[in-house]
Amino acid sequence: MAVELLDSRSRREWETAVSGSAEPPSYETLKQFLERRLYTLEALSTARPDHGTNKSTGKSVNATAQSARAQSSRKPTSRCPLCQQDHYILHCSEYQQKQPRQRLEVISTKDLCLNCLGKHLVTECQSKKSCMTCKERHHTTVHEACATSGNTSALSSHVSNKVRETAVTVLLATARVSITDRLGSSHIIRALIDPGSE
Image (tube, rainbow, N blue to C red; front, side, top):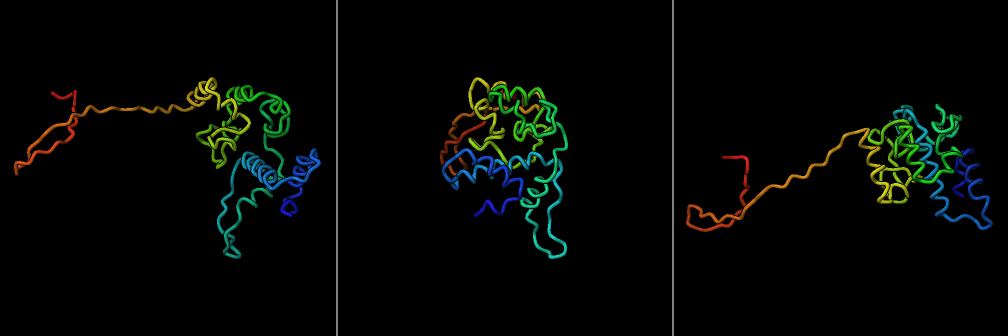
């Protein structure tokens, strides 16, 4: 069974996650658990070592497995920004009890990454993960708040306060013009109108 290949901490968390169900867990349940676990381990990672090739064998190192094993045995390097306890904010009971909109406020006020909940801007986020529901660059725990149209302004104000990104649409005036080439043939072309020229 695939669960036997997990490290002891991940296996313990898996058993906790499925202990409430009388029926055996499905493959989809295991897949979702592993995605969440990997997401958590990536978010906990503060500095990623260079995973190149193994010098003794010359073979490529499995960076994900190596990172997961290292992270599962390592304690969090910083305190939870919400309750100041020694755990990652995703495991904080205060954070878990909040509604998605309240979680979004916490992320904004504590200057956390909207994508991985780390202590950096979303524009600097190195995590390759995104929301498991819609695949956008926000954490799954705030998906509902980000998905509702009323909260998109709160989301964009959080991002725009940190980084100024402007999308400018430029419309160019054109006209269809008939021209005659040197052989006397007429052609209709589109000409660019420059309103600033004299």
